[in-house]
Every structure is written in structure tokens, then in C-alpha cells.
Image (cartoon, rainbow, N blue to C red; front, side):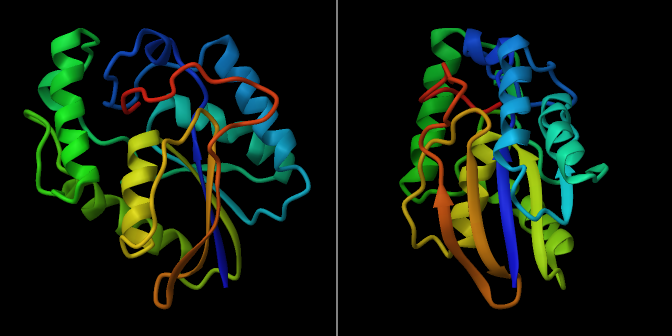
Length: 209
């Protein structure tokens, strides 16, 4: 049995400015984000964690670092689990860009997984790279695997891993989604953070990052 912990990264200045910032390596954590990452490490101190992974984005690696330090593990950077690519909207935080993003994101949540961000990815594109990464990292593992990733990516991938049978929710900075199971047998939802204790998050309802 595998326990899969999907952790969203801590806060960045792009979060604060509500900027669509998806392409790696992206911005680093800001001061609050670093505090959130440290708090995540302390939160997971009592957990048995057997592997710590992070996306190719700097903010995900910085978030995973305190978890790895507490667990005595090196953070492995992996392909495939970075944020859904925003394409032509990358780097924008204006009202028009947000409206265009929200329209596609709402379509995904309504079940139209083929909808594309302009010049960017669809939900199916995200799943096509994220799910094989999960299978690769968890296959044959009897223990707990943590992957530091991104809000929209975690939400879209978790829905797929759960067979599109569970309602998914916004994932706050350093929020956790915890699944149990195996790639072969399927996954069940153990826990979904809707708020993170100790350190706050200002981006509820915000863009992918």
C-alpha cells in the first residue's frame, strides 16, 4: 500500500499579484512562502516519509526542502508534475487574462477536459504527463511518497487518480491532498486540506501557479 502526499508549494509574489505564472523554473518563494514551507516540514515531522519529490519549479523545490530535511531525505526533482501551462496568458495578471483562464478552468471543472488555455495545455494534457509520473514514483512502493507540486495540477491530477468520482477543492499554499492505494489497484482519498494551520494563504480562488 502506498500513501501519496501531494503538497502545493508556498506563497510567491506572483500569488500575491494574482499573476498566471506556470512555466518552470518560475519565481522563488517569498518570505511568507518560506515560512509556510518551514511550517510544512514541522507539520510532517511525525510522519513516515520514504521519498520526497518536487516539480522542476523553484518554488516547489523550496517547499519540499524542509520536508526532506526533517525526513533525512534528498529532494528529487522530477519531470511531469509541474503546473498546467498557461500558454499565451503566461505572466499576465490583468482582468482579461484572468477571465480567459477562468472560462477554461470552469470548463474543466464542468467535465470538458479537452478545453485548452490559449496556446497552452488542456486538462487532458496535464493528466497525460502527471499521471505517468505518479505511477513511476509510486509503483511498487510500500510507504509514503511526497510530491511538491502546484494548485491546478494537483486538483486536476487528483480528480483523475480518484476516477473522477470525488469533488475536488481549491488547494491552499502548502495544502496537502493525501491519497492511499496503488497505481494498479486505484486510489482513495484520505485527506484534502481546505485551509492550512499556522501560516496563512492569500490566494484563495487564485490562478494556477
